[in-house]
Length: 183
Image 1 (cartoon, rainbow, N blue to C red):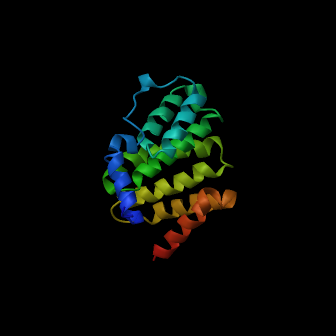
Image 2: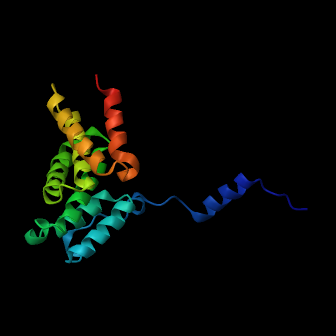
Image 3: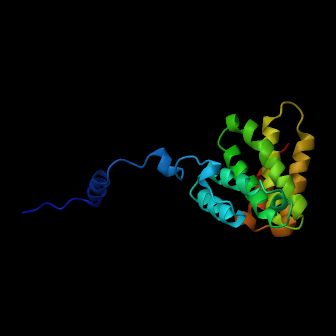
């Protein structure tokens, strides 16, 4: 007579049969890339960056986007906007986990976001990620941050006016969290 295993026993057994969890390299979308391994066309690079961002590999996305932006004519054009705001998003995501990375991720992220706003001031992405990165820069500052916070509010409100539903209500959620914590 066979004994039936409870469902959790089956799940545990299946996990054992599959082996160990994937390495960190698999979890983050593979090993870090270098510019020599990437294609040269900007559209292809943006597509690869989107795939890497979706996989949680922001560092790989940054490598691909920075390669796309090496072409000055592309970087300073309206199509370059797509790469700039995605670059700002990747740096913003790397700025979230801890303060150790913020010092190195916030400045280039803010540069990318400001360029995005310059190229397409009527689109939400540049304003939204610029507001986030300004907020992260405030966390790096010692002393008075009122002017920085006012810049964050200004960019956040602009993003909200353009599309308050972007990133699942991100502009409104960000401002709400700020107002809840502000004195």
